[in-house]
Length: 283
Image (tube, rainbow, N blue to C red; front, top):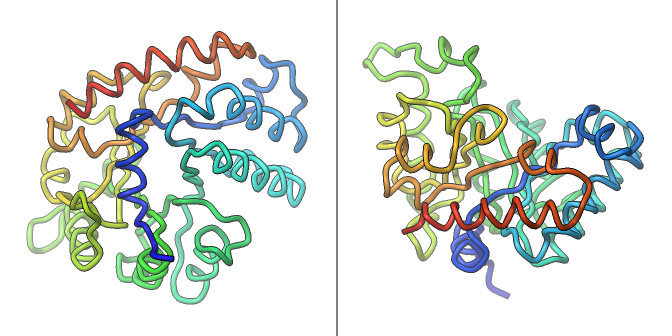
């Protein structure tokens, strides 16, 4: 059976369900508001309820794995069940793991999360690259072979990342710009039918100065955190990213949806409004 790249699967589902990416972030205060215990069972129940309510509407779900790992093997078992539930609903599961290392260690992290033989098989994962972009090469090859997606942190939405990401190399490029160039090079021999490769980038929706980086990522899907609780809107994504980049963007919304409350109707209502807005990114 031919491997279908993540970028192509995303394009297909975004055209039907929208590119909206629903974050599954079972933080303690969120579980309390949902009257769920702060435990492995609580994070499991939270994730399953979100998917049950929205699984036929949202195209992508992004479980924040840290909230599951907090509870050890039981939490990881819960994460595996939630990810399986996402995929059974016909949606894409983007595991927010932000792994970063070198050599066999990073390969093992990748093997844990992507590919048919993965310990917990997600459709895509997030990564860090500040051990050097060359450290990503084995993971990129694995992603190409199994049709997975990678989203590498390039420009984050947190202010504390600015100094490192905007530091300059001797050639004048910022660290973020150089990383963006490397991701584009990695994508060169792995482009899908829509012209996007396996190496996507995380670029914060709150940033007003991301244009130089975005111009260097013409073949990358873009994961845009910072919408909702952090202050950005879907309209901001289009304004800040520009029409071409916005069309390749997965706008991620977590707390704004979860804070609607533990009611399927409330979750459907707020997500429906966000889905309508997200479709506008692709116009």
